[in-house]
Image (tube, rainbow over all chains, first blue to last red; front, side, top):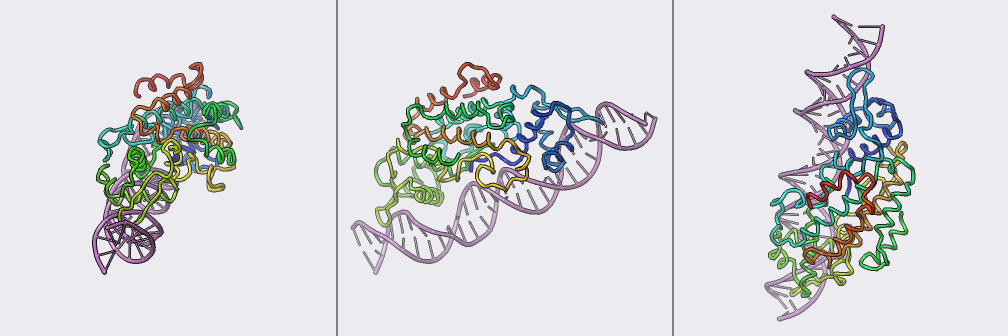
Length: 164
Length: 164
DNA sequence: CGCAATTAGGACTAAATTGGTCTTAATTGT
DNA sequence: ACAATTAAGACCAATTTAGTCCTAATTGCG
């Protein structure tokens, strides 16, 4: 389904919470506020910490804070921290693990597609994400939309309009 | 890892093969040409057929052909045929299956992000994909890139340039 | 100092998903 | 009639993911 994992989902929730609250917040406090189990909150925060996206303070009164301003953290970073590299296809990461590698002439194009998606995700900041109904994200979607409404997206634009 | 499944990967390989060969071609012929097992080829083709992307002919001399010109088939369609709806988050498809749904204020923005990604994928045609080093895909990536090189993507542009 | 609160770094199990194979039925050209 | 072919879906093994738990290391506070 071209999905991110649940951990990543929780990760964005945790990060937006940290973006809204500049205090240092403990994993358990975040957990109770966000309806997560402490274990899950801890796991997510540890990963975010090793990726350098949050700053951890140990000991009593310890907790987590964003390592950088929310406007300087991108969704791409959050996703990569929790999910690994953003790459739709296997062959974009490791070579020689794909059985059809010789006969596959689509590899170069997959690279380009991955790049496009990473670029899109890199342009959405945590600050955008924390703002309800972000205009910047909507603007991005508008920019990606086909210029003259032609091309293979033609028949898709219909349901695109319908459901979002 | 934000990946598509292997079936989807095979699916694009099969579709590009069909795009290059206008004859009606059987599952087993495709399999041998593309280094796939017949079973896998059959499975993929059946799914592509139920999604209406290929046309199947039964019986002796039967096989598959593209249902439409390759330029009228988008990568979004292929991915959705084999992978289900393109939606990064659970909550974009079914409501009420997410434990943090109440406290999650990022849902609206996730919808926008999904939309952006679907739009990007809907603009890549099978014909683009079949062309080695498609200029149209590269142009899409360029259009998505941040206009004035600002925003939260700033520190990512570096590795973006480096690896693709 | 010693205790309580906290993060670090894993191991571990159960559940869910995916990949791959197989079986049987239906269709059609020769 | 037969051989080639797709349709439909059951099935199991392998992998991945989710969730829990345990044991250290660190630090503020009484």
